[in-house]
Amino acid sequence: MSGHNKWSTIKQKKGKNDAARAKVFTKIGRELIVAIRDGGSADPNVNSKLRDCIAKAKAANVPNDNIDRIIKKAASSNEGDNYESVTYEGYGPSGIAVIVEALTDNRNRTAGEVRHYFDKFGGNMGTPGCVGFMFSKKGVLVIEREELDKDEDTVMEDALEAGASDFEADEDIFTIYTEPEDFGAIRDDLSQKGYEFASAEVEQVPSTYTKLDDEETKTKMQKMLDMFEDNDDIQNVWHNWEMD
Image 1 (tube, rainbow, N blue to C red):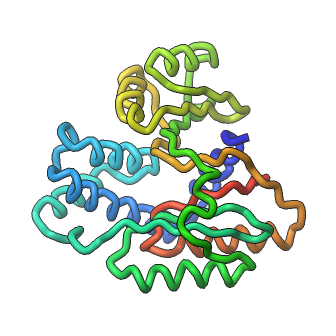
Image 2 (cartoon, rainbow, N blue to C red):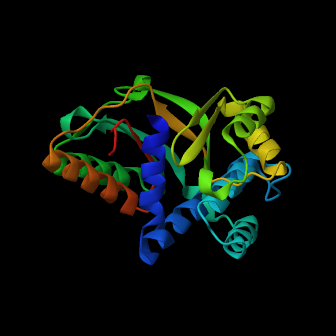
């Protein structure tokens, strides 16, 4: 179930046009800047948060030159000093649980925009914790089957040997789950064994999913997600919609 939803999201992002992909690069660039600020170093060998962000950027096909340029710029300026991390929770159409993570230099502006997106498509922004209990933070590594010359048993064995907490095999992908604190070490271990990832980050994974049967409601939910994704302040959106 979760693997299916994750692959649907990845395919959607891969299909975005150049302008949308540029926005993804901008968002990840902001994460890199904040990772350097919070980790106190532009060296990924000593800054694990930066190392995780670089892995996420590479999985999203951000060019290495872009990554290097952002890191050099952030290391020589105070650009990330005014960004703060804020999390919003709420409900989409038909009660879909939604968590929105932002990095913003203006909390009031971002809160107003997030509330507007919820309201515009039949949802509502709730109070902190209103849906958070339905999600668990997990490291998630996604590997495309067609990009791999190893069979399912080998991938599962390598993942579990590296310390993964769970493994799922779907038609198109393998999904490897880790405890958040083990994510970086397991990702690095598998990378050294030659694995490449379609997605690699710590996520908010829902415990259950909700299906939408009405096409109009599906359209509203997708439009709401698109508006979140289009906002430069919003880094991640997690939800429990069982996507087709």
